[in-house]
Image (cartoon, rainbow, N blue to C red; front, side, top):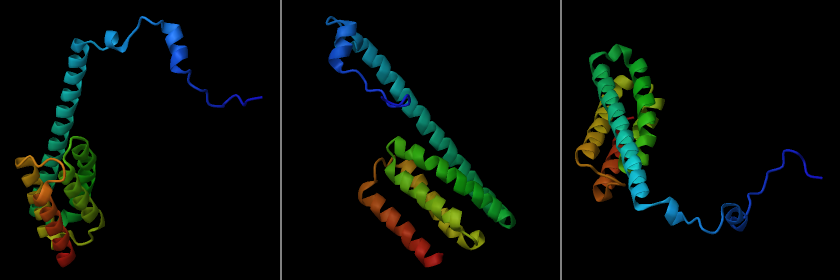
Length: 162
């Protein structure tokens, strides 16, 4: 006797074929017009996702400006930077900006663990510069040689100043 909460096995494709009949074909369901409609929906979602990421990046830039103007409130502002960099990290990776994701990850990890933000303004500024370069130059993927150089430079700066 099988338990009542046992997983149910999906019917085989031949069982499904018997239910819907032999005359239904995937080409009948996915016409060229339907495929174009689906592609348009996916492209709009990609554009919206990228715009969301850019909006979050603007928040990080504003957080950094706030940090520069109000160093006495640095711990609260760094928390915002850490939260926003975490939020943007996955979005950038999803839309093909692997280098941007790495920079956001580095910024998030540094901000999350930073106990002396006032001493590390240069590190935050260089993360901002690096991400602005990724966005302006539209560096998708890992950024190639430029991306490697940028991430190595950020890592070296963190090791030197942190």
